[in-house]
Amino acid sequence: MLIQVLFFSLVAGLAAMAGVFLVYYFSNWSRRNLIFLISFAIGVLLANAFFHLLPEAAALAPSWPYWALGALMFFYLIEQVLTIHACREEECEAHTLGHVGLLGLGFHSLVDGLTIGVAFQVGNSIGALTSLAVILHKISEGACLYTMLLGGRFSQKRSLWFSILVALATPLGAWLAYYFAQELTGQVLGWLLAAAAGGFIYIGASDLAPLTHKKNGWPNVLLMVMGVVFVWLIGRFI
Image (cartoon, rainbow, N blue to C red; front, side, top):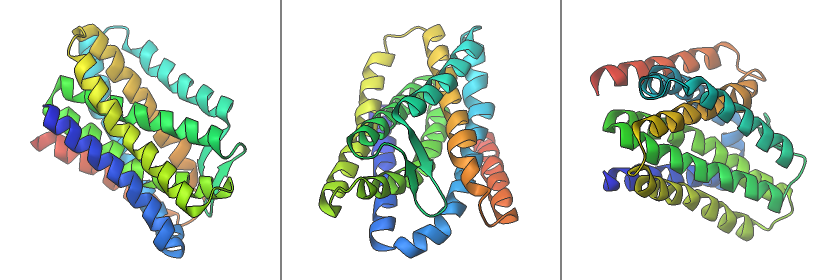
């Protein structure tokens, strides 16, 4: 199981770097087409939360709603405190750029890794599906981070190195979760899965969904539905 946790978390880190390099090498292309990947990622995130994470959490912990809602409110609070927001249509919006924004997205990346590690404690299928949801939204997150750092007047070289460090926080979080989660009871795992679901719902509905309302219309709706159907079909056969 450790190999799977490390593999998927490393892929998630590489996905974040892929977003960085899309902006670095193909800035114009990424601005035009990243929105389509974001739409698909919304469907994957929400479908994983409602089809897999929440049902598993409900089976393990009767108090799961408090943890799901608590996580959603926690992410909202973090973004309000750090004033970090997802990318707009053309650029990233961040009222506080530089080191504060870097800290916020670094923490977010660590939580992504923790989510992967906890999900694999429940089962390989839910671990793989959860990892897929993380990987897809990491691409847009990487693109946002790099653009935000440039907006904070970091050099291209420093922005690239800081982006790599943030990406590495995901496998670090997965590794930590793997070792600590083995000692947890089923009820605590249920709490953590519910919290992960709350995080997925917040990212999909609050951070990513508003971006898709800015352009392209129905293609975004179709891609979001495809993301939901994709997760449903994968869940039927894994």
